[in-house]
Figure (cartoon, rainbow, N blue to C red):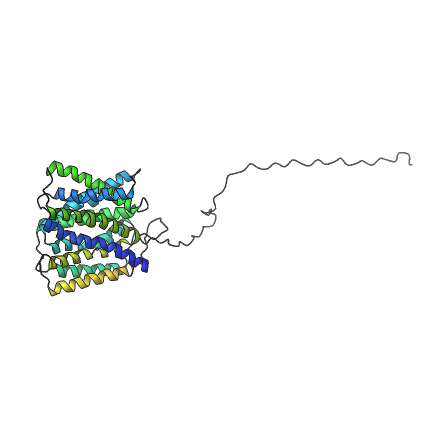
Amino acid sequence: MEANIRWVALTAVAPIAWGANYYVTREFLPAGQPLWGAAVRALPAGLLLLVLAGKRPRGVWWGRSALLGLLNTSAFFVLVYVASQTLATSTASMVMALSPLVLMLGAWALLGERPHRTHLAAAGVGLAGVTLMLGGPGAGVRPVGVLASGAALLVSTAGFLLNKRWDGGPSVLSVTAWQLTCGGAVLLIIALVVEGAPPPAGPSAVAAYAYTSVIATALAFLAWFTGLRRLPASTVGLIGLLNPVTGVLLGVTLAGEGLTAPQVVGMVLVVGAVAGGRTRGRGIRPVGRASGAAVGNGASAATPPRATPPGATSPRAIPGPTLPPRIIPPRATPPRATPCSDSGKV
């Protein structure tokens, strides 16, 4: 239980940092160049983790890193940047509250992780809480921002599930570094072609870029992908509900967006949903996968031996090499003495 709480707490760093990132992006970064904003966020974070990892991709991980970089970095960061600039802080973060349900259904279809009823109920409670928070006075809704948030939700869910599906390979640090570097390099090239020179940045913008790159990207993605390896996807999705809670609290305390009684009730429901989903985190078992270990919790699951049908060879009884038959030469038998006949007797 203590280990489970530790992984939940580590994973929670990511949605809290992402919820704060909406406010930082909206208040301190230029709005007209989202490609540069995404590139400056991703590439320095990837290079920093790449130095710490000290390894390059090998074999299939070149292609996997490129695909994960496109989903989790290139597309996701641009969409989040657009959503942050076109929606209120609370609204931009709350659209992502559908992530638990989307992540649960995706993990069921792609990974074979069947969600427990407790997780489904917790996701429903969390969605209800987010709905209450969405009705606050600071929740300005623009279709472009909502569409950008919804698209960011879909591409990030696909990337997160692929990360979890390929979790038997290199370390989390290496995989995170590779995909951020690949995605950031793609963003840099596109930003140079489409948006031209980078935007001017004053001291506040430099500090904001540092936060988005080091905290909201390098640290947050490392914590999030670690949680995906150690916890079921349904539990990780529920932890993601802390994103809108952080966005609403920062919108109220720093941006003056206002807070109502329904929003307070909604935040209580969301926190309760995260706590309720954590209690069943260790009981999830994957279905339809060949692995003998429970996916996500890092513990080896004991698999009972299967009965061998009559006439079949046990999978553990692996025959050794066939040896030629041993030829035993016959032993020499001495001739028996023939008794002499008594010819002289009548």
